[in-house]
Amino acid sequence: MQYRRLGRSGLQLSALSFGSWVTFSTQVDEGAAGELMKLAYDAGVNFFDNAEAYAAGESEVLMGRVLKKMGWGRDSYCVSSKVFWGGKLPTQRGLSKKHVRDCCHAALRRLQVEYLDLYFCHRPDLDTPIEETVRAMNELIAQGKVLYWGTSEWRADEIAAAHGVARALGLAGPTMEQPQYNLFARERVEREYLRLYEDIGLGTTIWSPLASGVLSGKYAEGVPKGSRMTLAGYEWLRERLESDAGREKVRKTRELASLAKELGASVAQLAIAWCLVNPRVSTVILGATKPAQLRENLAALDVVPQLDAAVLARIEAIVRTKPEPVERF
Image (cartoon, rainbow, N blue to C red; front, side):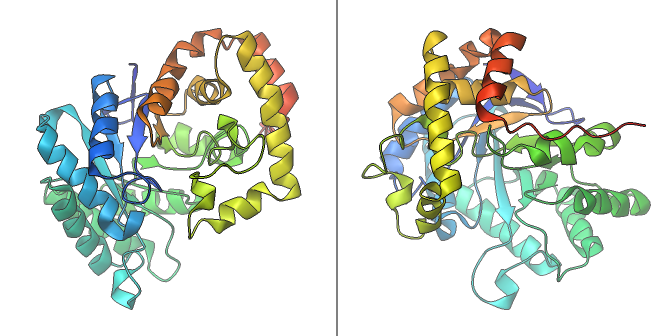
């Protein structure tokens, strides 16, 4: 395993991490979750990602049981939660001081840990002043309940505003952002956040490196039974896949699979390795329902050295998704 600093912080996260979105409690029970987490941990993974919204908290409950059963030293792994969608009532949503605090305490109970290593604002809250959220996060850090806080799918100006408030008040600002990043979703990580990497040392814990499974190649011949696109509540993923843009992504994935085969890799390994080539990526969050799938994805580290300039150019010629460069005058 390789390890990378989380932005400008001193925390070193495994280049590949393991997340529970969609899978835990929905597709994976406690026994399977334990097997997957142990496989990841034994391979050197030290970051496990979660959120209050995943399976309405049951994902955290399941992960907490596994962590307790495994008995790993608390100093050997990091665990996260995210705050925004905790329920349907007004006080159970958003980034108010109350919900930020309540969500943190609930996550600690569910995960059966004394503190969260990373705590994310799952989306921006236009109804709560950023200063209120920054103060709430700072209080949790001062209390030792959170070590680092960050954002997920925030715009660059929103992250900069939070950092500016924190700096002006002498409080802890956001350390990391969790954006979607893959061969088909690049604008934010490669272009929009450039100033944030340079100015505040933003780290990134990227999700969906396989574009919701499209870049695994599993949808080349349609939607297989048991995949996440057949699950209730995830119809929107299937609609995206079956759109013109989705079919074009499937076509490009077939071409990428041919290139991956030349390298002796799977298309999933190629796609994950491509994400790791970007030095702004602190860690790539993997998801899996089966050990074989997780082993394959973890082996993407071995593909990274093969992605030289020539191979990267061939990938670019297939996907044609590179954002326009930022002008520097």
